[in-house]
Length: 341
Image (cartoon, one colour):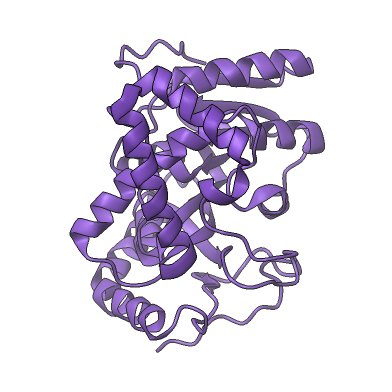
């Protein structure tokens, strides 16, 4: 594996996003979706001992620790914030798992690994907070073995959002939500097939005990003492401006999560197209991407219409491109594909 010395400047946002604040917590928290979502990822990617797993935007490494201890995989994490890498490394050594669990500093759009070495590659919520989503996904696919799994856990817009406000809210969140059809298109164009989607912010289902919020609600998950501790750390790192900005952003994000409900959390899982000396397989994947581009306006319009009518009555986002390879699994088994509008 390559060195973690990329030559990039250290990660240093001018003011903290809500994701930055959550990461200042001394608690080791699962990302949105919790342990249940990551257990589902393990099932859907057939995780088992001997497999190599990559997690990009890995934070403090909680999901990777779970995969290593519960499923016996060998795992690597890439995170742009060196302070998170340090914390994750320290915890890995404390667990005595540093031979199977390693972390590196790096950008999502320039992963410090050679081609086709991971069986499973996962892109977390902060995957594209410092780069273009297309470039980050291409890197995920590049380092995945042919036939391997590519997984995204991403924020999605569940209703129309004006472009300027999209930018402002993404800045507040520290992540870049997009419509689910945009994420699907990006995956296909990068050479991922059999893309399947599940909405993890909807009501209770057979595989999830309760609905989850798509993003950590600072006002709800932390006690007053913990919030004060986080703000004190923010003061040390960003000063008065950082703290005042954080407080205003907390109010806006809480409103977004609690009253507007225009943000969702989706799990997308697909396979990197199999290697084919003739190049036909990769051409087929590109054709799928081109087909998406041709039908994109209709698909987006349908998504927006459904979300705009009512968030609570919106249909399930379960979708599939090809004949599924996951028949019988709790997430995708025997669930009918959504009818075209």
